[in-house]
Structures are given as structure tokens and as C-alpha cells.
Image 1 (cartoon, rainbow, N blue to C red):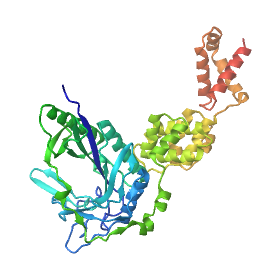
Image 2 (cartoon, helix red, strand yellow; image 1 turned 30 degrees about the horizontal axis):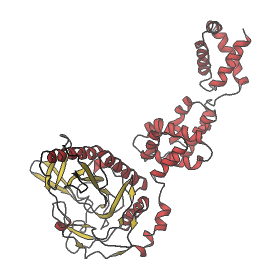
Image 3 (cartoon, rainbow, N blue to C red; image 1 turned 90 degrees about the vertical axis):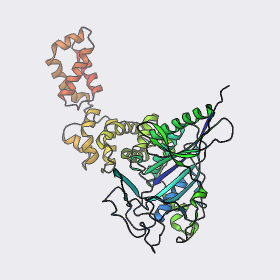
Image 4 (spheres, rainbow, N blue to C red; image 1 turned 180 degrees about the vertical axis):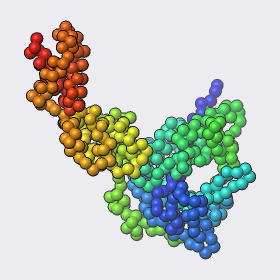
Length: 473
């Protein structure tokens, strides 16, 4: 009888924090800018006698993340030395945390967290020529938040969902861009399978740089380990990489343990009493904590938006803040305006903005434009024509529409002269209408919209045309 194996997965995620300076020195924190080795100093290059000073902004960011996920914050913390040598570690150790992380516990996307701690990133190794390796130290010392989950995930889909929600939360909090393709968020998956309640042998797959890679590597490892155990073999504890081309994992090295790293408290960095710093106070961090994605989902569902549209509104940086501001203003009175705005934002506005979230948008003008459509002052076609000027200009859309004669006419008396002209110019179409051809009415409405340059209210125009046709029978 074949055995049934169950996978158990824990994730470790590193996210570069978006601070102005590096973790332990004053160098600019922008590893993707400038020439290689241009943002460096004796501290991040580990010159003898240089002393690290913790970045309080980075610590506050981690503590704010803790507020968002309901973690328990430490009252006391310290930094440790994690000893290992690679060419991209100038000190031959990494300043990290071991026994006293800033955060323990918490929950995100249904996954329980073990701990969240702060450390420094390594330099970036480059292998552009065969047999030649170069090191760029611009990234060395960048603040790096590391999150570890409990081993409570059992499939690749759940792991991918968690990683996506984590990226969204980091961006919402404004503490990390978390762009995986640039290495700003890196996922490592610890995977084991077992046919009992005991955990199996753990295999770690490192440096997964896309959600597709996270899910693909986990699915592959579950299949690989299952095949090995089914055939009577054993799984070796090791670190593996992910081949994006072959879509398979490969052996890198045997897995280190905490004992191998020989952790000990960094003697150059004083212990941190978090409770004595006003900058780290829960009151201050709670006041600046933005609305969380989970809360936005509930609020947006309550006004009747579909789930796929909600995910675009909270997950697309370029439009999320626009809709959040509109929601705050109109949530109690203008559901129709909010629904219309959501439609425009997730289609036309996204096309105009692209991925550029830095362009200055006039939310007030956009709201006025949406109100004009809802109130029947302009139709959708005119709104789309005015959209670009409305978003990026300083002129009121109501003023623009008035100056260009685009305001929608809903007064039947004002439309009567236009309707009389249309009927006189199209006698054959009028005859077709009397003969029972309903499509002829749509043609006449189209002629009226054309003659008024779209300013006529289509519904009112249709009623005037039908009324005049009946009078002329």
C-alpha cells in the first residue's frame, strides 16, 4: 500500500528597507543608483577601527511592521555577529540578530509568524566575465528585515499568496519597495515531507526572486522528495538553488545550522532598550500606521466593488492612494461616484499612469469629473476626453467643459430645435421608424449626439425624438 506524504513549508523572507541611509553608517541607501562602489565608507567596508551605529529609522520601520501584523515587540534587543565568510561579506561576519529579535509572533494572510529581525545586507557579486568575479559594495550594509514563518504552510499556492500579501503590506507601509526582480525582496523556502505527524528532513531553496519561482520551486521539491521516499531513498538536509530555465532545484551546499554561525553579541553596538525611545513608541507608530490592505478589502467590498477590482485598487501603487482619498471623502454619501471612479482608475487611469506612481495627480479634479458624470452634466465619452487634462492639470473639468460647450443638455426644450432639424434632414429614416424599424430610432439619436457634439443627454434626447415623431404621425 502506497504511503501518503504531506508537505510542510516554512518561509524566510528578506526585504530591503527604504531608509535614507544604510543600517550602520551614513552612506546613501540606494544600491541601484550610482557607479559601483560609490556609496561606501570605512564602516560598510569594515576598515579597522570603524564603529557601527544602528539606524533608528530602520528599527522604527520594523516595529511599525510589527504593529501591522500584531506581533509582540521586544522591550530589549541586541545585535549579534553571524560568522561566515564570502567575498561579499567584508567583515567575515554579518551584523544580524539571533537571541533577541525586535518582533516575535504575529500573523499575515493566515500564516503565523515566528520572528522578525533586522540585519545588514551583503554586497553584490557580479560574474560578467568568465573566470572573473567583481564585488559592488553599494548594497553592503543596506537595512534588511528578515521574517521567518512557522512551518504551517502545506502547499505552494498558500506560500505564494503569503509572499504576495507580504509585498503588498511592505509597500502599503512605505517601508520597502519589495521589488523581487531587483532583489529588494528575496524568499527562501524550507520544505519537508512526511507520512507521519513528525516533520521530515528539511531542504532549503534559496533566493527565489519571483512569486512564480516560489510556487514552482515548492511544487518541484514536494514532487522530488516524494519520489525519493517512495523509492525507498532518504532526503538529505541541504541548501538548493532554483533553475529558472530548467524549472528544477539543484544542490548548492549542505545546510548550515545556527551552531555553525557561532553567533555572539556584537561588542561594538550597545544593547537597545526599546521602551526608552520615544521614536519607537507604539503610540507614535500607531498614529502614522496607514490603513492596512485587509481593512481596505472589507471597506471596498461594503460599497459593492468586485474582488478583482479591489485587488487592483489596493495592489497598484499608482492608483491605490487616489482611491483611498476618494473613499475617505465619499464613503458615507456617494457610492455611485466611488464605483464609477473605481472603473476609471482600474482602466483608463491605469493606462495613463502606467507604472509611474510619481506623477502628480489632482484627486480633486478627478473627483469633480466623476461627479459631473454621475450628475449627468457630461457623458462618459466626454469624461474620457477630459481625463488626461483633469488628472494632470490645474483647471477645473467643469470649467473646461463649459468653455468648450461640452456640458450635457438635459432640458427637453433646449433640445427641441435640434430634434426638429434631425427629423427634417432624415425623412426616409422617419418613414422606417413609422414602418416599425426600431433601429432607426438609434440612428436618429446618434445624429442628435453628433449635432450637439455629445453634449445632449442621450436619454432625454431619445424621449424628445419619440415625442416629436408621435406628434407627426
